[in-house]
Amino acid sequence: MIDLHVHTTASDGSLSPALVVKEAARLGITHLGIADHDTVNGIKEALDAGKLYGVNIIPAVELGTDYEGMETHILGYFRPDNYMNINHYFKWILQKRFYRNEQMIKNLQNAGFSITIEEVMKKANKGTPGRPHIAKILIEKGYCNDINDAFNKILLREDIYIKREKTSPKSAIKEILKAGGIPVVAHPVYLEESNLFEKTISLFLTYGLKGIEVYHCDHKVYHEKKYAKVAKKYKLLMTGGSDFHGENKEGVELGSVNVPDELVIELLKELKGQ
Ligand code: AMP
Ligand code: FE
Ligand code: FE
Ligand code: ZN
Image (cartoon, rainbow, N blue to C red):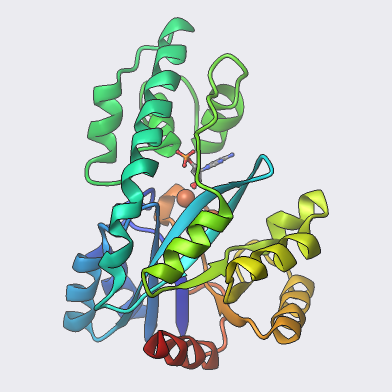
């Protein structure tokens, strides 16, 4: 059993890296990809826990990029000895995140919500601070019932929402490669929404894309079949995972997406050769 796409408290998951690994061991997961948004801060703890509980940890990151106005996620897979090579890349991303958070908090305050940037930072603790943390505070203060409510009724409001400046897929793919990692397009089902799928994959290939996430909690069987075909056509690695966020993403359990074990053998082979 493998799960190559998991979030922890280092970004917007609800379980710490050590607890995610412990839970993975209990479920019989042999290979676990820790893929937090825009950070590798949870990897060290996960690697240590992996040794303790006997789970192979694959260090990873999920970069949120801007592709023609659409948020497109690029996963980067690394080895335990090279994942820190990408760390420098997060500085700019974090600065833009902090700026966006501040602007959104100002908008919330102007709209009459009682919330401060200090509360957001405290809520994020060591994690990448973002809208899920703002949402949690709004729920705690009784402004909304749950996370979906927080996004739909407040955070996406025209007078509240501020777009975060993001890197491009080209830059993300190239930086992952430069750091010795393997760039993989995450949950391609979202690319289908604007009929950009074929065009996007062809373009990303020119940047050096090496893999496609075939299995994901939001993919139906026909998506899996389609993306497996695409992988074969373009000689891309196949990956897959649950996109587990703990209780921050309802209905998505750790290891709940059926990912063939062979995929990880190919991924590890490729990582070794990087
Ligand atoms: P940020 O990176 O700060 O803009 O926040 C993006 C994160 O918010 C995503 O990774 C999701 O975990 C979460 N998210 C985005 N849209 C929604 C939504 N409609 N409902 C719940 N969570 C969401
Ligand atoms: Fe997330
Ligand atoms: Fe994602
Ligand atoms: Zn994810």
